[in-house]
Image (cartoon, rainbow, N blue to C red):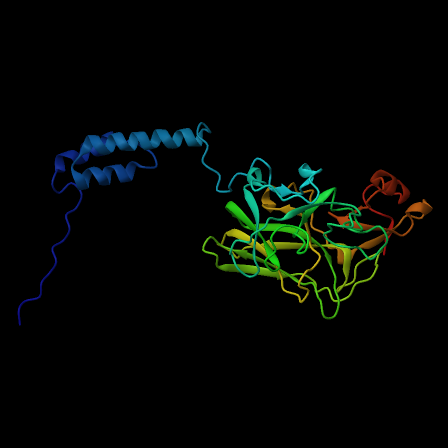
Length: 344
């Protein structure tokens, strides 16, 4: 058998230039890169190059340490608009198409697509003014005076809806609403309104987040609307007539959201639909803005003022928020600085 080949031992630093070892030891700058500098000189036998590079690196890091240079934040900057979209800047555009460039200042855009796809739809989302418009409506409320209104007043003055199939532009079956990000996000939230229905015409929405490759990341289903009747004090699980439902979509760890699509997965071919209060980047919203669930409303008991007795309020950040009522008066009536004296 031929003798085994023994690999040659790799050269050690300064084997080819032993005269530079003392110079490298003396001239390499003392600091975080000193050992690297001496080794690089010994391996390459180039003294001036590595001494100069080590000095430059030390100077750069000293600037960082002293605060003269700011390292980039790993968290993306919030867009100029902040990413909180409530369409209130479009008051006066009742029943008109949402402008194509709307949302650009928030790093997002809105469009309609065919349900369950990313295929372009031949129409645009429509704006709806809050109120009793009986011709072009997003939804009709069962309670008197509640067409295109919600019981807590969270719709503001204007919101988004689908075009009505028999009245507005080209209709090619029920569309889905698509939100596209110029960049990406890790979490978003928004509200859908008036999810109700009948046994054979249910309203049920699926909110789905996708990455840049249009791979589904996560989805959330709304309550299924199977009945419809007036419930002015609180919604029921299957009847959100003139009530809102909040969704929150969070990407799995390490993933980023590029698209959010809202599809009707119920059986009603022409469901009522209202969309508002979209938070594109939850990191950009002040901490004071908190999630709330209309199915968990509380009646705030303020015994000192009869007009506030049994007032239905939502609880935000642990505090009562009662539409149309002065919060200072609520706190005074309840004899407390922050919360009602009693809540059922």
